[in-house]
Image (cartoon, rainbow, N blue to C red; front, side, top):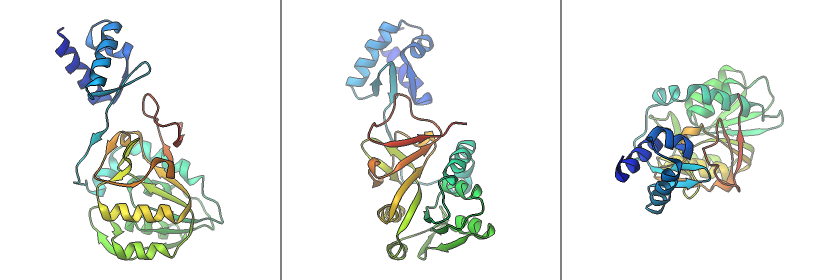
Length: 249
C-alpha cells in the first residue's frame, strides 16, 4: 500500500471510530506498527489527527448551526442517555433548588427522579410536563419558545433566570472540546446555559460520548466550570483539569 493510501485509510478509520490504537490501525490497514507510528507523526504534524500515547484520535469536528428536531435527537444514543440520567438523578437531595436545562439527556434525568422535596426550575417545555406528571415542585422559565428544541430562550428567559440562585444545575451540550469548551448551535440557547451556570453552586453537564471533540458555533462555558457526566471517556483521555464522572453500566 502506498503512503498516501495508508494516510487516507487511517483518517477514514478515525472518522468512523473517533479513536484507535497503533495495533488496531496496523491490523486494519494491513501494515506494520512501525509504519503506522511514522504515519501518525506525519498526520499529527499536518493537523489531520491528534497523536496520543499508544494511538491517535480524530481532531475536533466543527459542526454547523442546523439542529435536529427533538424527536430525532431523542432516539440517538438512547441507552447512553438513560444511563447518564439515572446516575445524575442520584445527585439530587431533598433540600436542593435545581435548574434543569432543556435537552434530551437532561429530560432522561427527570424520568429517574424518585419522590423528593427538591424544587426544580426548567426552560424545557417537555421537562416541565414531565416534572408536572411526577407531582414535583416545579417552576418554568418564561420567554420566547424555540420550537426545534421545545425550550424557552431569549433575553426575557435570561431575565427570568437572574432572580434565582441554584444549588445544582444540570446542563445539556451539543459539543465538548478542550479548546472550545462546551458549545451549542444557537446564541440564545448559549445565553440561557451561561446564565444558569453563573447562578448555580454546582454544575453538571450531561453528555454522551458522541459529544466529545465536536465544536458548534457558540461556546457557553469553559470546561473547568462544570463537571461532565458521561457514559464513556474519549480514547486517549481528555483534560486532567476537567472533572469527569464516567458512568459504568
